[in-house]
Length: 415
Image (cartoon, rainbow, N blue to C red; front, side):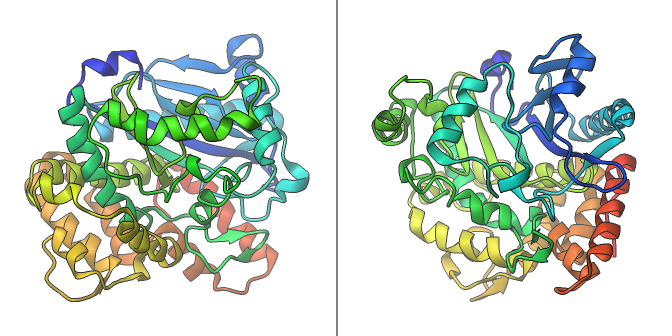
């Protein structure tokens, strides 16, 4: 979200960021040409191209391009169509390189240790510093694509309400959004393998990620003291030139961006098409709104949740997506579920039915997309149902070629 976001209040608008792989049109191998794509649009190598409502920008690695809201959006469905139009334009621009965009949160057969090409143009010193400290040529660094949702707030009170709600929702997001089941040509055994790597790739400095679920923090001053100051202290011996700032290094599942007046959720896997992505984001945003409006438990109760307790739920959902069995009865009761245990497919079906009643204007445009995700499973689960757990390379190619087709045409991957 841009600087104008600081004037926005809760749920008035949203900032959306979508990351995609650039791959060879024939082989689907990665093609590190994001810099050439941006050069074609800008006339020189650069980081950002503004295409009216949607902007294009680089990422850490040169085979990934990000497209994002230029101003914050108020209408998720309209934004989905704007993203879809930009994807078509990018694919047209990539034709001369015999390349195209591919969705999902991890390339299914990339060898990141051999194929990674880091961004080498503007701001490359930041990426070089990351690479020196963490070795970014690996899964979870150079082989990942995600969706980021930026939610505005104004002042400490709105921040505290939003942050408390986000902490409660983070654990079940992979049950809606997991799309990274396959690495190096085989089923990883984890439905959201991107997130499995997410908390491991900076273990050398654990203060950066924490337990993915952030601790309860109620003000900017508390956030500085509890999160940013420990990060600054931990990174100092590794960054003598002081290139890296705590703001960039904070890698929790949701990070506060006080300079933007927003909290950014970072643990959402990219889906097969913009309508699927914006459907997922709409469900998450409406659920957060319901929590902030005390339609479930009240704010004081929300702030009492222990980070480790939420993390235990999260870890199971990362592995099993909608098949995760939640046995924490208190967590189920947050969402008005009285069963002693149930899977996350049931939890999200229950939640979406409630959200359809409370926020019909926001939810109705995406009801068909969400029904596919709930009834057929996350994209990870649909991919594995299509392939099985032991499959030949040609089947993998065929499935991911179909996913490229879904992205090009803004359609869901259905069984």
